[in-house]
Amino acid sequence: MPTLPARPYWNAMTWTERAACTLGSAVAQGRLVRGVATRYQGGIVVPVLGKTVDDRLHTHGMDHLPDGQSFIIAANHRSYFDLYAVLLAVWHHFPKARHLYCPVRTTFFYERPLGIALNLAVCGHAMYPPVFRDSRSGTLNQLAVELAVDVLRDDPRAILAIHPEGRRNTNPDPYQYLPAKAGVGRIALQAQRPIVPVYVGGLPPTFGELVRERASGRGTPVRVRVGAPLDLSGLYDRAADPAAHREATDQAMADIAALGEADRAFMAERFPGR
Image (cartoon, rainbow, N blue to C red):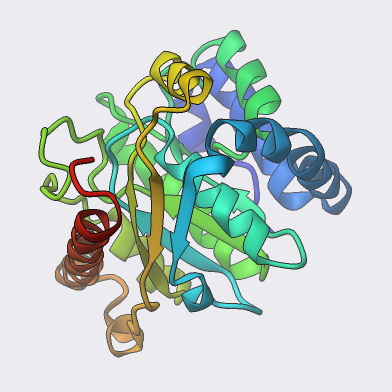
């Protein structure tokens, strides 16, 4: 099962990062703790978050989601809530709850006590493992990869949801994408698990706008479009090769873009002018 960071990683962390990583590892490792977190997500988190989008959520291709094994979701990133919509759709799809993990930047959620508390309250500490974006990233993001690989290998019910673009795309055109980071390909090849491409559309960038749209009933339809899992088995023997990581990531982004074009056609037909 996933383990706590080795000493070189541990020594490079702040005390809050150590505390949050210890908590995340406990949730991922412990059968009892993991079960409590999953029940909390199903009983509190999903019903509450669902009230923001369930009445305008359109899902497509959900049958592509693999059953009986862990996998990675790779989604475009235009809103702070893209993965909430994806994971709500995924949660309702499977008859038995899956274990959800969303790697997140350490800023706030791992660096501040309030962030740790919100990670627990908002999603049962599903924002794990941490991703580092400061001068320590070269060292500590190896830890993020190792923890993600451990989760996928050791938990057949795990779903790791990632934004390959890394940061939120503010381009006015929802069908344009930022250059992707190769980390999703690296994790997939080292864990030997499939990447499922997903296009998400229709969510506003801020929580305030999301609430206002819900209250007014005038929000754009929220779409979650799932593509077929990528068969990356031909790259597994190159799991340590950065060129293979890039190739796998580029395949995922190409499929996300294709799903985006299908979404463009759907919106033009069903909701012209939106």
